[in-house]
Image 1 (cartoon, rainbow, N blue to C red):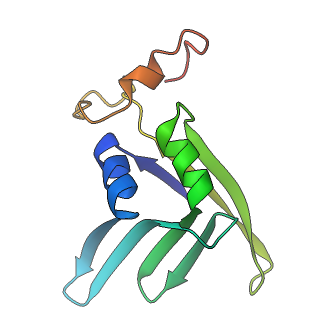
Image 2 (cartoon, rainbow, N blue to C red; image 1 turned 180 degrees about the vertical axis):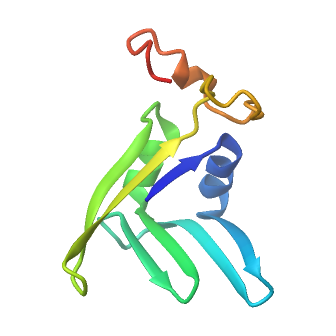
Length: 121
């Protein structure tokens, strides 16, 4: 699961400890996705309940990611009921040139212009 987060999403997450988006697939089916900061956890984890996917971020991990130039958080979560793993990658959204039609105003230009990593996009 790859999650790209815009600056405004990060601001909401910082202030409200949660950011959510929903998409209505039909009148009866809405999928909701959330990133939520939790104080009582030490590991990034994801859950699926009904049609709601929530990724929980421990406060210390979230605060470091939000307040630094750290680009992403990556974990592999074991799914015991299926004996599989879920690869979770949460990244700050960069203004890459391969999506010309996209409004790039709410992306992380300052991280994309990293002289130490010129091929970041």
